[in-house]
Length: 91
Image (cartoon, rainbow, N blue to C red; front, side, top):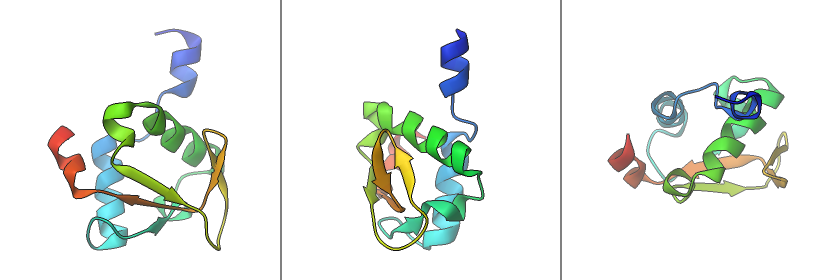
């Protein structure tokens, strides 16, 4: 793995991210504040940006901006994420 790839690698496995999301949201499709994932701001941006770059994963993620702490996800401002239930097909 190159140094660049290691720097961009998610620090939270997708299955763990989905587990935390479901604990916070209660069910798929509900928005959850990005700050609720208990990651540092840099880790939050790195994890979600990395998953957002992967087409097979990103199609299940929906970022929105509302009140709350803002994060830069691949250069776009976001405060919340909702995840489609179909993500379970790739876990």
